[in-house]
Length: 292
Image 1 (tube, rainbow, N blue to C red):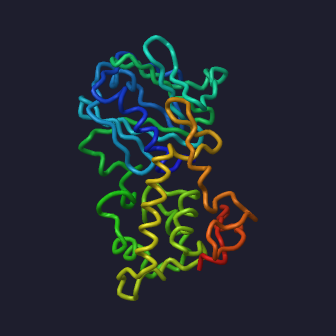
Image 2: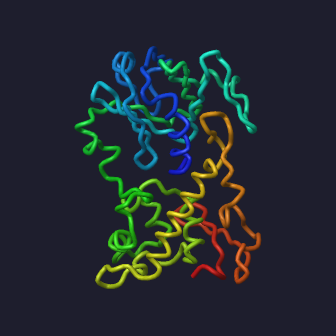
C-alpha cells in the first residue's frame, strides 16, 4: 500500500492541474470502489472549484467551493493519470503504458484547467468520499489518526508519550496509525535503521518512566523525518502498483538501506548482513549488528 511519501508525491502531481480549477465533468464508471460512492457523487462535484489540495496521513483532501471535502485514498492499487487537453499524456522517462487497463479507470475528472484526471484501481480498494468540511475532524476515517510525522507538533516528546509503557515492539508502535500517521512497513524499517534501533526493541524504551524522551526517541524522530523527506524528494518508492501522476516511477527504492535487502551488506562500516524477520505477519528488515 502506498505510504506517506507516495501519497504526497501524488498530491504534488495533482496540485498544478486541480487547485483553482473547476470540475467541468465527472465520470463515475461504476457505483463503488472499496465502498459505494454517494448516489449524488457526480452532481456534488460538477461545477465546483478546488480551493485547495491537502493530505492527511495517506488520504488526499480536495477542498471544494461547496464547503465539502473530497476524501480520497489510493488503496492497494489505485493511481491517478493526468492527461493534457490535447490528449497527450506526460510520460516522463519511466512511463509505463496502462491503456490496456482502461477498464479500471473507475472515476475520471475533467477540469477547467484542461486536464483529464483518471483514477485507475484494478483491485478497487481505493476510496472517494464527500464530507462536509465542518465535520472533517469527526470523520471516522480520520479522527483516530495520530500526528503528522512531518508536522510541527511531532517531536521526541510526543512520540515518547505515545510509547510510554507500551509492551509492543517499536515496529508495531510506529506502524500504528494512532501513534503516528502515514508510516507503513517500508519507511518504519528505514527510519529504525537510521536511528540504529532494532524493530524488535520494546517501544517503551524510548521514554523514561515519567514519559520524557531519551536519546533513542530523539534519534528516531530525526530518522523518521529524514527518511520521509528523502523519499518525497525522490518521488516515492515504485513498488508494485504505485506510479506518479505523470506515469514516472519514484526512485527511492534505489536508496533503501534495509528494506528488501535480505543477506546484503549493511551500508554502515560497523554493520553486518541485513536480516529479514517476521513481526505480526509482516516482513521486517534490519541489521542485527548496528541496530540494537
